[in-house]
Image 1 (spheres, rainbow, N blue to C red):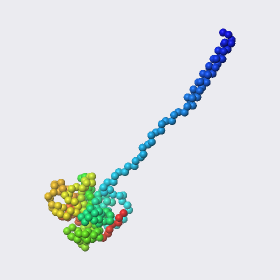
Image 2: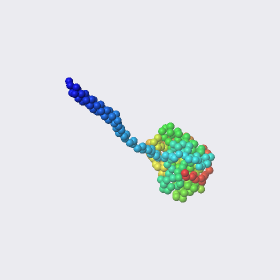
Image 3: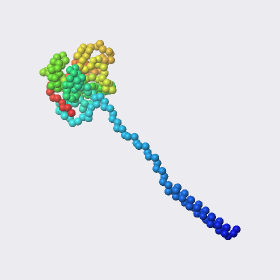
Image 4: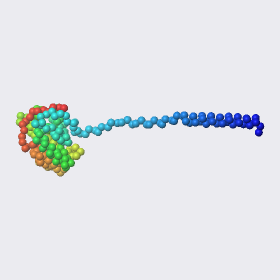
Length: 249
């Protein structure tokens, strides 16, 4: 081979090698320096929804400071908050169709309240409980009722007073474990023979419900009234008629 031709081949090889090296360098730069693609953004978190349980019937607020004389009175729901309230005279759902109390609170003399709680706990062991329709009734409220219905067959004369005015009487019924009232044959404050304890022309279950209430009350010293299946009075001792009206919270 001639020297000139050999020289041309060497030059060509040199340039080929340079070109190859340059190509490899560019390839490495492009691959190594290429920014990696950012991962797709995570889906936005679902907004947090604050859930509140629905308030149940007769749900009581957390008790606040005691605002009454505890030597004279006991608020029954402080003693046992599982006792239900349906205080009819704090609404217009009563026989005079008018609200009598500014607010519904249930008070008794301390001994009476303790007796009612004992009855309530005894019923709870059988899957039942108590609901109050009316508790202590201040004599000023007795006057309001008397002025609406001045008939001693239905409303006690406030000049003599009633067991309610002494904090010794309870108008109440029995509820099941779901808070549903047992069927007693009539509503509260029904004025007729069907509400009498001696009235037996009712379905067997209604009579048994009344007997359940009668037995529970009798066992804690509460005496029934013959004409009202819902009315019971404490008889172990007596208390004075009172005019005290509870404050509204």
